[in-house]
Image (cartoon, rainbow, N blue to C red; front, top):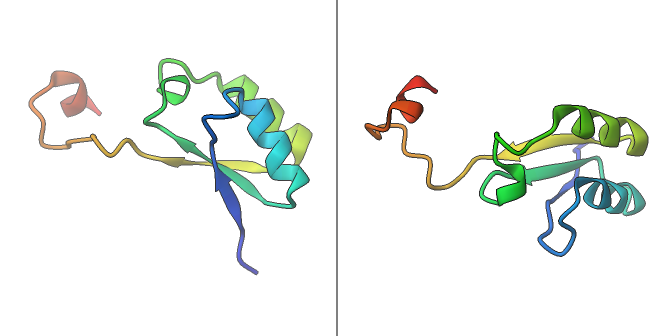
Amino acid sequence: MVDIGMPTLIELPEIEDCAALCSKLGLQFVELNMNLPQYQTVSLDTDRLEAAAKRYGIYFTIHLDENLNVSDFNPFVAQA
């Protein structure tokens, strides 16, 4: 069986709304788009994600930022 999911939607800025729609559509996961401000690592609330996943019986995956440049000389990128 193949799991089927959906991307986060800019029309639904709250993670709970995306999770509810995912569940309503019978999908298994929501892919968090790390390009969007609310899904930046400094903005993510893991307790909130875990609660939404449990409440709606789904899980989350991530779509890394397309601008991630692993050869960047930025010290924060180098540390990652």
